[in-house]
Length: 562
Image (cartoon, rainbow, N blue to C red; front, side, top):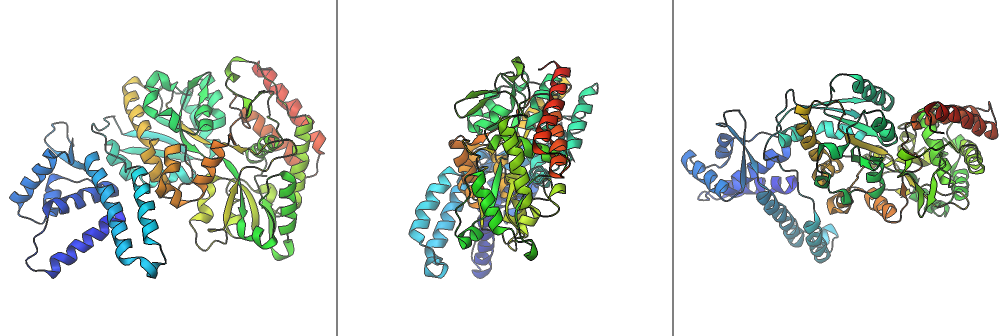
């Protein structure tokens, strides 16, 4: 829309400068100024809008009144007295401009596209017409601005998606009508700060981001407030969220957060390299190892695969997901169609299941991966595994979708436009799984009552389809909603969204690989330590799974869960 708007603005200037008797269209000029201000996150006042009309002040005032009466402009009080207003495009005006943007683009393609652009303009017309009808409109300002002392305070993870949100702070502040103060921490510091915050008399934050595996712990320890206690859940349109992401936000049958990122861990692979070698994309662990061996050439500085192998949290996540690749959850979950049942975790006892045959096969598989990995693999974690892939030094990498901007937004990257996306290749007898990661945004249990309404309204805005589309358009590669994944502009941004949607429909998106029980963080740490010792050659695979099992059972016994 902004691109078309800029074109119309420049074209209008050309017309007015070319023909001396050309009269400006105040409605058109005011609409341009109003929509640009909304998209740029700038405050538009009656005075500035009348000034943009390019007609005398009295005429501009009348035209402004006409647009308000036609319900094209919404007024929002800027002061307690209600005498000063900011002006915003109404939903009606935004819909009209979306339609106009599509028509202008189609007309320009039809008139000036043709052979010079190499496009079939007739096909373009029909596809664009269809796509425009399904596009999610831009965010609308709240009719009533949020009124809360000091603005809205948010605690998040310092990853690319939440950093996009921070970059769009000005736009969000205009939408909700108050200041936003965002603090971002690394994953371990985020968990520590959220737990410290729960011990305070009143929360320092109105909204906090929560890694999916923490939901059970944070619900049980009263870190988060049940959302159905704070709001009408129907406002969120739960059916629009990817099923795995929405279910992961629950504990004991109650939602404790709204999916803000649904970012499965996938296998990134270089389609061009596979085609050159005549290899099929790997669907099994054996096929992956064969491909890794084919591409592994350390003397030329090229390696087969990269993954999370740094000691502790990073490798611990890899262990749980690799066990899932061999059909084995880390707990004795009840098997159901399409995976394992995690709905009753809050009401039953459970025990770790690391020392199993599937656990042993997973450990041996990681040792095999080590053979085709770069020399610094044992210190690689979340970002380090994707950077060398983006640089062209790695043929394959396990990585969350949120890391895709490292190569999707860099046209100089050898992986730019040549990356394919697959769920984790499966071990013998198992099915492909795309383990769901990401974050929900929830409300602290100790939030003062007088701030609750503001927190709910801001939460609805930050997790809305319109906001999620904004994140994607500004570089994010995570998306928790079906509607956003189906948006044509989102699909054009990256093939990752169509791939993830397909995995969701095929029931490959699963979050049972990291069940959100209160003990899961300790289990991840234990696996990250014992398996790291295995990869360093200090202990055998069987010793690693036995040690991890023993330590995990102690944790569950102490917590009364085993």
